[in-house]
Image 1 (cartoon, helix red, strand yellow):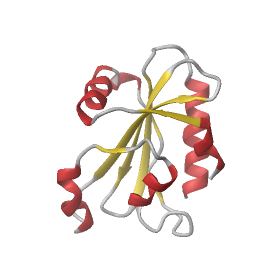
Image 2 (spheres, rainbow, N blue to C red):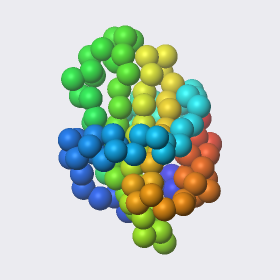
Image 3 (tube, one colour):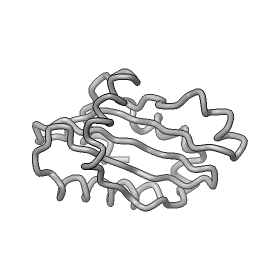
Image 4 (cartoon, one colour):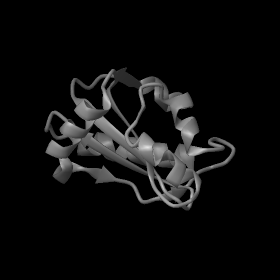
Length: 127
């Protein structure tokens, strides 16, 4: 998957991610939930194979998710190729085996067009 080469991942721990995310919640750009393409992702957990900077945001919910009763979330912090701004991304795996993507520009600069492009491209590649 070529788009993953555009992400320059920054190391971040779960608590720091959640703190940064909480502060910018009203600026989230979201995809609709979509069915994952089984040829690309046999499981949502394979996201980490393509996006090495992802961390588990709610590992305590893994059993609930695997038994079909809860959501599981991955998150990460990255820079895009030529953009100086820091971005936060969240992948949400639903109990119905669908995937939702959310992105925030942590720098508060106007990058909406870029974020929409990233979300649309990821949805196209993963659905």
